[in-house]
Length: 63
Image (tube, rainbow, N blue to C red; front, side, top):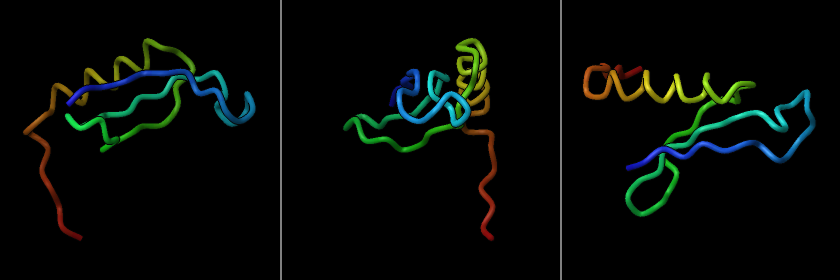
């Protein structure tokens, strides 16, 4: 698995165009998770670091 970060190219500036986004890809390159948009690249990278830090520690709740 690996994370990708990219700048959103579609939409308008008010709907996220030019903002940073992330997605998590499986070994076969399929997207298995993605996040919201961030104005700053550093914020996008910070969220990825938070996700990596809790890997395996986050409970799964059935609703």
